[in-house]
Amino acid sequence: MDPSDILAIAKQRAQENQLPYAGAMTPQEAYALLQSDTKVKLVDVRTNAERDWIGRPAIAPEQQSAVQWNLYPGGTPNPEFLQQLVQAAGKEDTVLFLCRSGVRSRHAAKLATENGYANCFDILEGFEGEKDGEGHRKTVNGWCKAGLPWNGA
Image 1 (cartoon, one colour):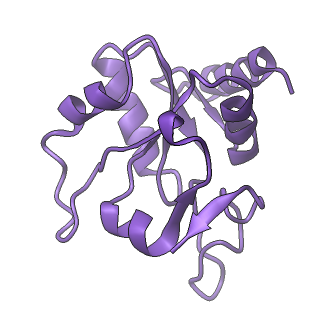
Image 2 (spheres, one colour; image 1 turned 90 degrees about the vertical axis):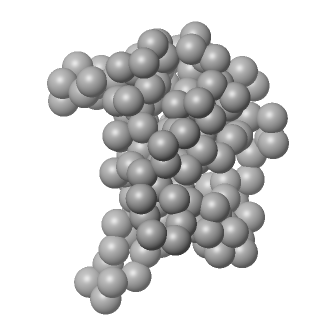
Image 3 (cartoon, helix red, strand yellow; image 1 turned 30 degrees about the vertical axis):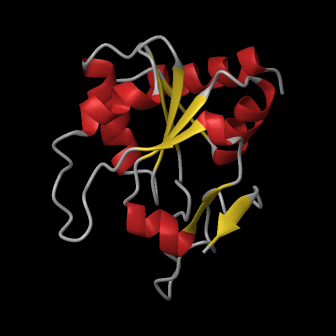
């Protein structure tokens, strides 16, 4: 799929769902966009512990950054989120936000947009996806379930 098609679909989702940021894309669309445009940035907003213990997307290192939305341990909001985001991506960059299941990434995309980032996108479903009936992740949806490359813990 062409990068402009992916962005158009993601922006259409934003309009249909009245999202307060540029758009939302599936993990497959995000991966295709990252592969086709090396200027796109993925910002993983999970905690350092989640990335260390669970894993992370296997994409070019220069395309991904880690900016915790909440801090571990304790889960308190990261008071330096916006300052750290400045180090990860420019305000005109296309920025894809990723978390565990797609909740924190939505909040990050909204906050970044409110602070002048023009092209913020949420990666729907997140890295591990929703829980299944037994409370396990990576079995319903998300980056891992989609079979996209990742480095495990």
